[in-house]
Image (cartoon, rainbow, N blue to C red):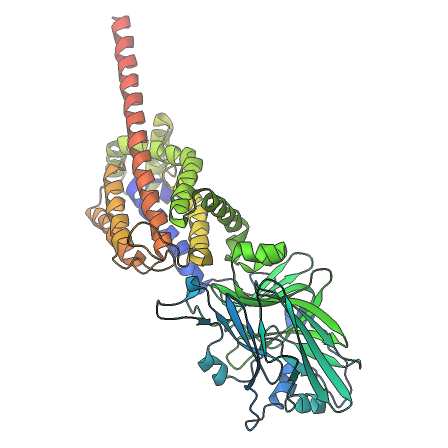
Length: 543
């Protein structure tokens, strides 16, 4: 197979490289997003510990919740509202945060909206068995049934958060058992929960199902679990099967593209349980007994905000298997933003830095392609001369490469080596909530949305077409030439619906590629002219 690749002309190898890049770049997010298998998820068979309970108890929160639903019980009645400058919480009669509204204009879907609901009402109503934030389910069936039919009493009907944190106490009287939830809310979306339960009852506490704002196909949506050893486990929607237990958890988060609801422990760990609902979406819980403390957060996956609460929380900003490389790129982008004050110009500066770093690879690839172009006529002669004799053709081709110092894979390899960088930038720009509402120049008012006038996609396609004309090519197959010429049009159509911040990166990348190509072409021309002059001078000396 490798021998056959060596006989291919440079254009064929370029097309193969592009095809491989597209196969890696485009379908990955849809078909190969991180799953439990890819991230060392703890399976039920590998790490499930059965909770020993009396015969009157059940072993999972799912079982007790199935018996706790009462259609005549108005569980959704709101007893307290927590109002801050940038968000609003609604707490229902079962002591749960049933809805969260973000009031920051940056996160609104359109100009007419005044707040954004993180948990869709239709989805909540379609599956009322799914847990809400701060929901408690008891292991004891009878106690759980009583809890789902007994309303909480709140210390305040409304809490106004300004600069200082404020505390809300929720109390539920369950016969001789008194349950207290003491919640301290902070103005940035962070909260601290203290559960007081005198008896040593087993119960399950949930951070809630993930937000349902961004239903984009190309991003991860589901549950993220961080173990105390630093291992990150992800369970995507539609992939949850049965029950999995994760002991020693430091973070348990439900996430979509931009938002999260999570629990975390600063100085200790939690016992996390992931169940599957009727649609095989993950339902997150933590198991506890008696008094219990945990910290939480609901809101946007803003890197700086999460870092200010706890640096560990930045791990919920998930980029898939390439996170180890994408995260440093985002930190660089964030640093550039702090210098220039605009995300659009920060993207341009990031593109420039990437091009400078990758210049040695680009130069090497261009030189190799130029050499292959020069020997293309001789390659064609050998192919015609040894047609039907692959072994002799291979031998003479290798001699030709060696004589002229050409590498048959030299043009493709640098391109393929650059793809992880491009893919990491793609994931960063596609997942960065910081780009929401970020303006650039006159017509771009949100770098997280598509260009409303298609200016950037058209410019990107045009610069890609120009780059093709500057790149050394010598097509031997007319069909290959036609396919190659259509690539700018294909990429333009593909990028039309992409976030304008991502298209801006590819457009500017093309501009820098063109400049690099012009510089490399001039360098090669000077080098060739110098070699010709030296060769001519040697001939004159010999004469």
